[in-house]
Length: 323
Ligand code: TYM
Image 1: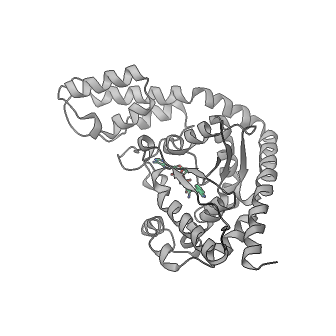
Image 2: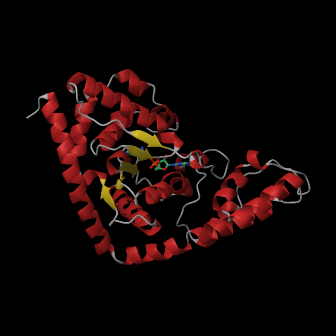
Image 3: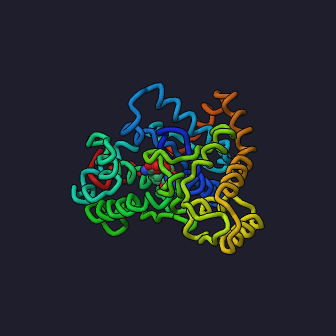
C-alpha cells in the first residue's frame, strides 16, 4: 500500500506528534511503500522568519531520522522540494466549494487564537489534499485532529473525479489511519497536546527539562490514600503509553485501590519518557554533527518524490485540459 503523511516544521516536535503519528510512520515503513514529508509550505501560515523556517525544517528531518525513519525504506522529503504540489493545489482549488473550507474547525480555531485570517490559512486544507492526492496515497497515518482534513481531501478528490475523471477517475481516494489509543494525546493541562495550548513536552528536550515539565502535569486534589479512576486521569493516560506492561498494571491497580500519589506517577512518567528517547537522542546528535548526510537524504528523497508526483500531476493536467 502507498502510505503518506506530513508534519509541519513549526517548532520542536512533541510527544503528541510522536505517539499520534511518527510511531505509525515507522511501523508502516517496513511493509509498505511509504512517503513522509516536512510540510514547509504549510508552515508559511505561521512561521514568518526565513532562518527560523530553515532551522525548523532541518530539525524535523533530523528528529524523524533519529526516531527511526529509515530513508532506505521510506521516501523522506521536504514538501517545497516538490513544487508540483502547488500546481496541483491550484487545480483542486478551482473545484473546491467555499462552503467546505468555511466549515473547517482548524481555520476557525487558529483565527480565534489570534492568527490573522489570511487566504493561505483558509486554503490550507486544499494544499493538504494536494499533498495526499499527488502521491496516490491509500493510507494517511495521522492523529484525530487531522480527520476533517482527510474528509475534505476525499471530497475534493471525488469532486475532481466527477468533473474531469470520466469512468476511471483521476485520483485515488485515501483513507485516514488513526489508532484509537493514541488518537488524541493529552498535554500537561489535560487538553490535547498542542503548541498552541502551550502544554507540550518536546521529544528532544533535555532530560532534566522533561522531568521538570512532567511535574507540572495538572491533576485534581484527590488525596494519596483515596481510590482514583485511572481511565479519567490524563496523567495515567500518558503514563500507560510509556510504561512497561508490569509498571502500568501495578500503577493502575494502586489507582483503583488507593495509595498512590500523583507525584510518584509524575516522577515515573518523567523517567519513562527520558528512557524511551535515550537511544534516539544519541542518534540525533550523530545526524546533527553531519548536516551533509541530512542534505543527501533530503536530495534523494526529493528526487524520488518528484518522480512519483510528476506522473500524477500530468494525469490531472491532461484530464483538465492543461497542456
Ligand atoms: P501537525 O504538524 O500539527 O502534526 C503532525 C502529526 O502529529 C499529530 N498530532 C497528534 N496526534 C495525537 N495527539 C496529539 N496531541 C497530536 N498533536 C499532533 C497530527 O495529527 C499529525 O498527524 N496539517 C498537518 C500536516 C500535513 C499533513 C499533510 C498530514 C500537511 N499535509 C498531508 C498528513 C497528510 C499538521 O499540521 O500536522
